[in-house]
Length: 343
Ligand SMILES: Cc1cc2nc3c(=O)[nH]c(=O)nc-3n(C[C@H](O)[C@H](O)[C@H](O)COP(=O)(O)OP(=O)(O)OC[C@H]3O[C@@H](n4cnc5c(N)ncnc54)[C@H](O)[C@@H]3O)c2cc1C
Image: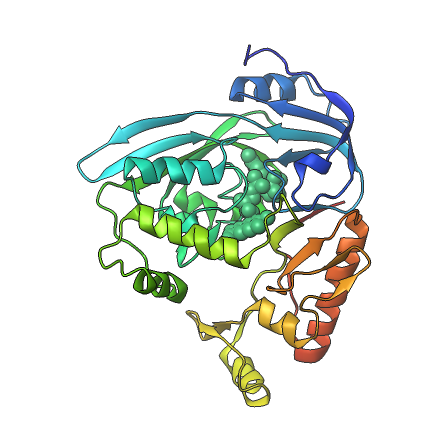
């Protein structure tokens, strides 16, 4: 029964629950399959141990064992809750797999998230860092989310304006960090999709394949193809995607970077700022493909830290800190982890 209290496990091995394949243990672990289950569990919880909400574990680094209770969100379900001539409002359980949800929408012909194909993880985690790829971010199709406040056990709906979405950021990584468990997300998808092919590599593939009038399925297939050629598959090589966010620096600073390194790439943002690819900075600092013990950066993309097998969370974090330090020394730029560090 999805409403009865789920069993709490003890000393759970988290290796299968994080894509960096770090062997850490959780003092307590529970998988919840419905909002009711989550609420009953929280109401009965004595609050002595810290809580951590976990989805697919594709954006977390457990530095140590977690001395608390992991709430693994496994709430499933998809439902069209509203529809008009142009749009579909699809409510999706937080535990649904993100990529499967994208493909479901692509098959139905509902556009808006095709560029976000193959991003690992769950639907409930997608708003936490406002997932983005290939010129599209979640906030463009986000309508609302339902969440439970862990402390008060009260339910709350967050609309777009409440979420403070920004580049790989939201209120859930800032003021409300660790305070809510998302139980469902509602997406507003288009029946007449406007395709986003602004990202160079997508257009290049379309040209190669001589596709002149692409469908959302074409875009999704191409994104999958590009990603498979560029990023390591976590099932084969432990990783959490981009380990750091791309730093955004003032234009003046970017100009001085450019004068010293004419090949420095940068993407202009609003407010006189430029986004610099963290992968380029890390590569310049000599870390691309470098392996130390069981950890290293991916040979094709320095921004991805990989576990070659058996690395501890601490080893991974030590490498991340060394990378931060050398980029800071070389460029006076501070890299901020995109991955959520636990411990
Ligand atoms: C190979 C690879 C490629 C990637 N590419 C991209 C990319 O292109 N773009 C991108 O944006 N990200 C990318 N990522 C990062 C990751 O896939 C996303 O951040 C994803 O949304 C994480 O989902 P998850 O369920 O695994 O979250 P988890 O790793 O389980 O959790 C991430 C954070 O969200 C919180 N959280 C998880 N679920 C919930 C919930 N239900 N309620 C409240 N908080 C929750 C956790 O507490 C944690 O702080 C990539 C990762 C990998 C491994």
